Image (tube, rainbow, N blue to C red; front, side, top):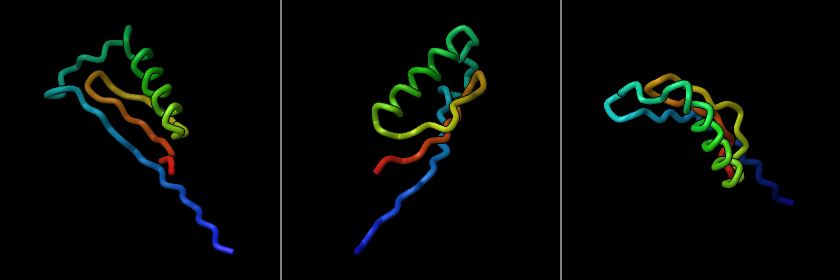
Length: 64
């Protein structure tokens, strides 16, 4: 009996254009929550989403 096991963690980084510090604390949480919702909708469990004023990091499990 053949079984396949796929578990690929992706560390992705999104940067603002020209690394401008556009992500203000007032909107940072909204951006992270939106990203989390999109990952869940794509069936990709998220480990963490965090960032700085000029970029966002995420660690998620790639869906099959």
